[in-house]
Length: 284
Image (cartoon, rainbow, N blue to C red; front, top):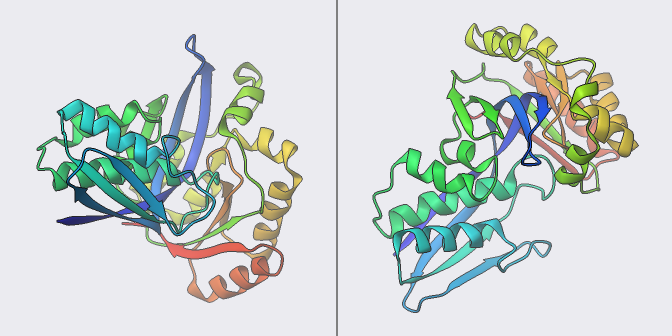
């Protein structure tokens, strides 16, 4: 028996850091949603008690360092499953891009193995397991647009944003989330985005207000460390995207676009100097 799961990419419509916690993590408040750029996960039961990962992508680990491997081991141990599984990752989401590709793969693995082995775990239980793997994994379990607080694991689902085009562009660099948070001094953040403003714009389907309310406090760190990201953001704004923001800790920058007539111009303009460019839709 095989099961298949999609693992969509996430973007942050707002990302605020409130304080640094005693455990070394940061208290955040952010709004996340998903877009139609997705990895595809295939899972097949094996007769022997082992976990095997494969992928067409040559740039990801296929052992215990892979979050999908960790998710499979976690749910096996939690439920006492003595069977094995073969997992194939068809990667479409860029790695280390601020799009939660690894977290989404882990969430899809938890969902898929729950089905494959008939474990009967509910959403809340899967999200609790996901917390052990990473702060974005609980959100990726359902993929519903949500306000995330705490380390990102405390979720308040809200309505989906108004449908629009999303242009994603990743420069040819990788960014370490730990490094970015490590260089952020939460006590010295001058301008905080308004989570409520973005949430209200989503709720009342106000696209222009949503674009104006976009904000990410991690930009001040990443844009200084990596001028390529600043250049990419400025190019996307100049090409006419309605709202532009870096997702997560970067380096991917996204632009919200309401008119399809603009999409080709922005996409082609970015492709002139950036290889990883995607024109996708909000997942509603």
